[in-house]
Length: 172
Ligand SMILES: NC(=O)c1ccc[n+]([C@@H]2O[C@H](COP(=O)([O-])OP(=O)(O)OC[C@H]3O[C@@H](n4cnc5c(N)ncnc54)[C@H](OP(=O)(O)O)[C@@H]3O)[C@@H](O)[C@H]2O)c1
Image (cartoon, helix red, strand yellow):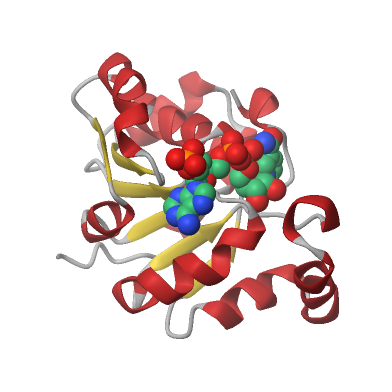
């Protein structure tokens, strides 16, 4: 896989820009730039929404979830730049992945896919709540700070926080 030379501007284009700019401006930003190969780990409210915005901005997006067959209608609607499959395939498809799973799933994702993610950029959209993810994980995120807690599960991976502070409907 080719390294796409990720600089500060490229990362901002993916994280801040998508959250702050209207779609028309995002599309303009994408014009002239080669399409990026992006993956989502989780394709629910956040993974599905952000991934769809990336597709609309002209990028190639490989969506993944535990049940990728259920993503077929979504990717068919999004067109040829969207694909769906298992998480290992999604990670292998590009240099940047969006992590959009319930926080309690992160240890499993890290165990199964941490090695494949090494050297890549992982955009962490995940937040922890006691009810969904358990007191122990919530306490870890509070103690270390949530970005550092996520990074601790993924040694050698360039973890950045993004898309975690706005609801999926607002992003859409
Ligand atoms: N919803 C929001 O507006 C919002 C805003 C900011 C941040 N967040 C954060 O974003 C994360 C995702 O929230 P969401 O609302 O998008 O959740 P969601 O709609 O329930 O989607 C979760 C996705 O993760 C997948 N998944 C679960 N375990 C997995 C695993 N081990 N490996 C691969 N994929 C796995 C699920 O696959 P299946 O469907 O096949 O089970 C599903 O596609 C959470 O941490 C949440 O706190 C959400």
